[in-house]
Amino acid sequence: MNVKNVVLSVFALALTSAASFGQANVLNAKTPEDIGKKTEAQIAYDNDEPLPYGYVGERDILWSKTTWEIIDLDERVNFPLYYPIDTNNIGSNRRSLYDVLVTGIKNGEIEHVYADSYFTEKRTLDDLGASLVYSDTTDLGIEQYNAEGFVDDQYVRRFTLDAGDIEEWRVRGVWYIDKRQGELKYRMLGICPVANEARSKAFPDDNIDSKVELFWVWFPEARDVLHNAKAFNRRNTSQPISYDHLLNSRRFHGVVYKEDNVQGDRGVRDYIADNALMQLLESERIKEQIRNLEMDLWNY
Image (cartoon, rainbow, N blue to C red; front, side, top):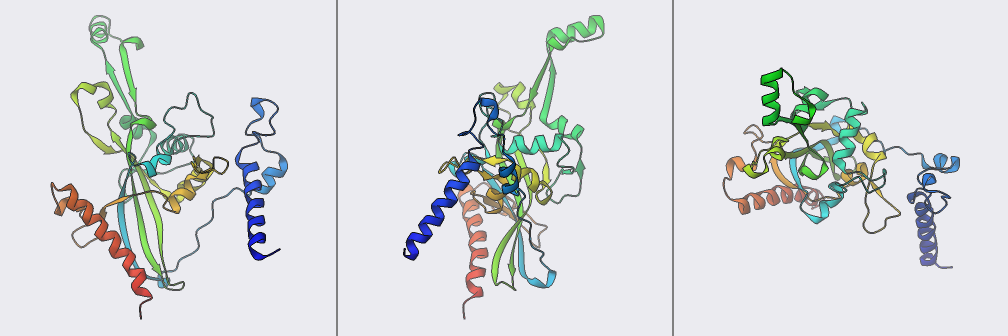
């Protein structure tokens, strides 16, 4: 057996093993309730933890730059971060990135949530409720309150932001050159969902465009939650990808809208106004400048 056959055999064995675990016992389930239940052998085999980051000393960093990017959910490559948006007719093992983070915050698995990308101002669940939910009293409810001093729930309209309302994600990360390994690396620091305020759902005819950053999450703290949640793999459904893996490996397309600079980290729009094409070209210039550093590192 030559080397090529050995490699193919190992690869096929790995796929078979991964498929048996990726299907979550669907092929061995006797009833629908057995789907998702793992055997003791499967649990022991999983060792299901996110790959820990290696320690990086300050002396090991030759160069670094912080960037902020927009992940537009209208782009096909970013669909795994957006879908599924309707969870009524789909299994509980598939949730969008927004639902995963919000559930982790409500369950206390993600303890700290912030109002800005510099992580200086913490927010609580009550603070998030004001952004994610909008309550409106109908005219009949107002009349009832004026006459009786209270309002029945039937006269109160509540509008809640859900996964389908998220238009983009914003991420903050650091590009750095590890001089020990002579390699350009990326470390994500924060992630934030962006959507119109919940009030816009109450008045859709007003065409309210009020996109806001709902909350920022310190990415390293959320890795356990993101690792346990799986994104859809369109090329092989038996091998779903964890959100932690998807984001760490940068399997998305982002547009740089800000970088750290001497002007107080001003954004691209602050010095290129009312010209979307030039803003996009400036974003690509920043990316190209970062990529060229690694290439120049090995030029003699």
